[in-house]
Length: 235
Image (cartoon, rainbow, N blue to C red; front, top):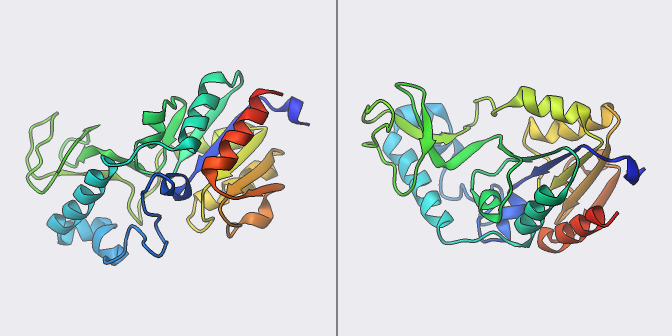
């Protein structure tokens, strides 16, 4: 069966970046601790108090500059470079650790912390350092209309048509470091299984959707992902 696998879709979640020192969403020291979701992670929050939302994401962006890709990121980048078949790495994470490790066939379904989005002209562009309410759009020059290019609660994740197409065509779907609690990503395994793909979960503990996977490997991503990549590339 494994010899028939050519087309692979991989989903990564917060558990992958947690080993680099970035807090997970719902953990004890979770990313949103001290802030209600509706205060910093919704379009209404940005309309109501843009300064608070900017301060929250400016702090996240500053933290990102203090961490490095871990063994799981590096292994997936190696897999990207050496896997001869089709591959799509979908990440729920808004950090840039996959890119910094070297991954190319990558899609950020929830946006990117290191990008801004101008609500005046619609342009998206790279952003480093603080953004704040006085940020100026590099495309149209408008001041005060730039927001973090993050998919907030109540907004549609990016490139869902491309993701759905990839899931329906893949031979293997692998979920790494995800809780299985956030949709639509939590439903990816169902789509892949329905269309005949093999499914594998690699997680620190069984996810909420663990029973949907045909195989599970439980443990640290930094240990299990390099092992899996080595197995796949040495087939």
